Image (cartoon, rainbow, N blue to C red):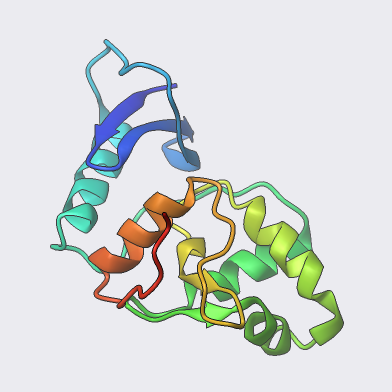
Length: 154
């Protein structure tokens, strides 16, 4: 599994059959093998996004999860660049307000951080809430998208 360096830290990629199956931040060291094929394209698109030159990703994905998780990830993927929504609004969009905790759990299980933009989900009170990549990265990703984050993390 290749590990790439980004402006937000090292990222682990998992690719199967030229489809991205996992992207997560890691403390592991950079891979010594040269990037090829899909790994090279993921790095290219991710670098463009992090530098503000790209607003969406065009990568083939193969996401493993339950039907419910996939429906949540699909809904998250429909949130436009530079906009946010809340767990509650996402639950409403999916037609089940009572499923707010399940929606949160599905978001927490997102296997391809940044690509499926779960960083665009905030608390009902407008505050940044959990993010598998860490709240500092969530804030940085929202700022890249021009979303004014008015919360201090410190």
